[in-house]
Length: 569
Ligand SMILES: *[C@@H]1O[C@H](CO)[C@@H](O)[C@H](O)[C@H]1NC(C)=O
Ligand SMILES: *[C@@H]1O[C@H](CO)[C@@H](O)[C@H](O)[C@H]1NC(C)=O
Ligand SMILES: *[C@@H]1O[C@H](CO)[C@@H](O)[C@H](O)[C@H]1NC(C)=O
Ligand SMILES: *[C@@H]1O[C@H](CO)[C@@H](O)[C@H](O)[C@H]1NC(C)=O
Ligand SMILES: *[C@@H]1O[C@H](CO)[C@@H](O)[C@H](O)[C@H]1NC(C)=O
Ligand SMILES: *[C@@H]1O[C@H](CO)[C@@H](O)[C@H](O)[C@H]1NC(C)=O
Ligand SMILES: *[C@@H]1O[C@H](CO)[C@@H](O)[C@H](O)[C@H]1NC(C)=O
Image (cartoon, rainbow, N blue to C red):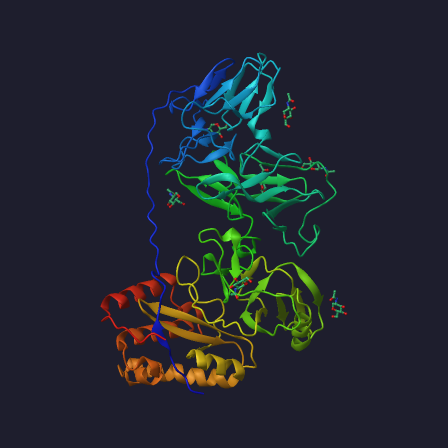
């Protein structure tokens, strides 16, 4: 088998996006006050006009994110945490105007948040009660009390995404994550008591919802829970012990008194217990999911969660990000799916990748061929998952959601594509997504015509490529998953190139370059690209470069390059 590199104009204008965060520091003078009398109000313009709990742990008032955004939330936050961490919000989905908004304890007993034009954004259910004052307690609970000190309303009954020590989670309450960093709106992840009395985490997205914790493949008993206690009550105590009526419990790693804690449903779908340290930063002292790619919905439809080792989202080959910066929207196919029996299709294998749920059919005793056939025969089938455990486990999938790649998953997903759709676009080096493409079991460096040939050689299936680009030049590495012959060939090629690189011989570059280049290329750049490509498929995963070092190498390479303009294809 002949190996070849193709180098051509890369028309992606820029590979890197630099994001600059602007940190604004906040200093507000605070006059301490822990209650608001009936008939008085807090106004948004006066940032010192806040309620503070007696020992100053918590502050309550109008909260904003700084910057130019004219959005204010009536909130309770930790006074001494570095980023004024919010623990409760009245109006998370409907921020108030920065002028004219106020929170009043009206004479009729209701606490009311009004916008600049007087519209009511939020109010308590205490109209026509004898509510006398609003008070912020040391627990972080904002309460309305009558003259006798009886509590008529409390923020603890209406949590947002955080549970504080001594605050009960009940059958009527749940924690809902925020949408994303910097957006307090209701997000897609919920911590709640399910109908069978078990505490769960659920992804509740715009189109779909699915439970992912505790392990959805086990029943309550298998997850060491009980369904028989219907009191549905859970609480974190002052020691850092959490206990629930479904017998689930855990302890903070720093268990003990005197530490400020919060249990938060984070927007990445993980439930975490945090402890505040002396420098005002939060440290994670427990989390529900150690394997973060087990969170459902995190990379959206068709998206795949990969460990880099940090969990990141990526799109399968042949798919593109639907809405850059918003992984909830997932990836969209670059081809048209038609449900016709005449459309010829092919499958592309992604090693160690699986999508959870949406099974059309399932069998534990299927050969690879009949598994593929059942997906071929059903035009609703978008992919099939096959693993060689037992007698061959086969799932056909109607929707690709909850995708993840885990090195210990003993199987692969086979994505269905129209046969004439060429899956040869570069893997996304842009963004924060992946180090190397999802499954690089070996590389074939080739031109697109080579790609066609190679597809035929590997039985029309299981083939895709990735590309590395510098400025105007791009090298495509085709990756295939099957066939020992190619494997040996590839190893020999890689070994040869490595030796030549070590010996600073560069005649091989001419050998691998596409003849259409007519010799118009920078040897240095190609050598670097090939070296990076080879390091990305290093058999020992721990020796593979990180995203950062790949980008660094590309930037250095680009900087040193003589500008070369290869012939356009
Ligand atoms: C207000 O709502 C809470 C929580 O639903 C409830 O416990 C309380 O009784 C209500 N108060 C009034 C005065 O209706
Ligand atoms: C304030 O009170 C809360 C609740 O009683 C307690 O957990 C916390 O340690 C106190 N903080 C200070 C600084 O005394
Ligand atoms: C907290 O939990 C630990 C272990 O689960 C237990 O040994 C300890 O007694 C608990 N402490 C309290 C105060 O409940
Ligand atoms: C149900 O759970 C509650 C709260 O954890 C507990 O107090 C109660 O004893 C439990 N009931 C039974 C029957 O186990
Ligand atoms: C406080 O937490 C931050 C963030 O987790 C950590 O970097 C820092 O070392 C911690 N400081 C102390 C004194 O524990
Ligand atoms: C898919 O179909 C639409 C409308 O029929 C067409 O505009 C579009 O170009 C097609 N896309 C591809 C990738 O074939
Ligand atoms: C599921 O697969 C079995 C054989 O494995 C087949 O008999 C059955 O008809 C299939 N069901 C559907 C709904 O396709």
